Image (cartoon, rainbow, N blue to C red; front, side, top):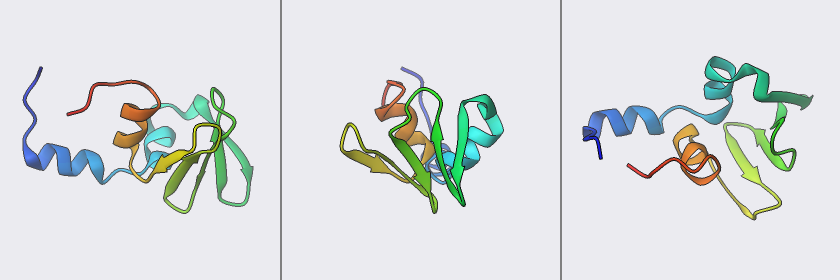
Length: 77
């Protein structure tokens, strides 16, 4: 497993999901109304006001890192 510094982890946790998707996976992002979005793959995952919640699974968070770990199945750092 690669080693990550505390600073790298802190920086990764500071990125919200909307910013991450707009930057790295714009095709996955679907605007619903106002400032509310979902993803093409998970229409019950709602993104709004710097946070996200996956309604069909009953959990959410604020960072893109949490999304990558909890939804996309990446290993925890």
